[in-house]
Length: 132
Image (tube, rainbow, N blue to C red):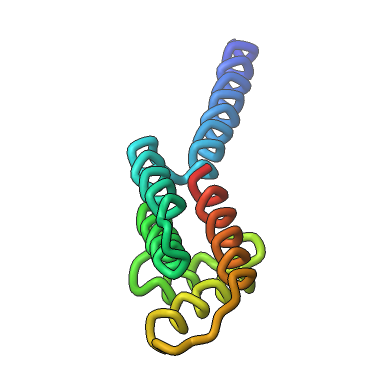
């Protein structure tokens, strides 16, 4: 009789380990399929912007959407603060967001094409990473 209880205990422990593994794997994914579709659509639309300034703005908006779909709330700045450890190269993402703000608020901002291209690459990488 005690061997039966030991076997049941072992099965319960194994089932718990499997359940924790499944939950952990799904938690790491983070974004639902429908959210991924929305984010990928926003990213595609941003990348297709012909005007470089609008491309940066749209990429910033797509990043905001991705973070919102992951459950982060507030302004993009607040979302970045809260999601910071989750995003690789967070300082570069902050720099890209600051460039977007300069472009939005300083109408005579002198920004090189290289700066814009770098910001777009950084934002694209962050968005794709979050949408995994």
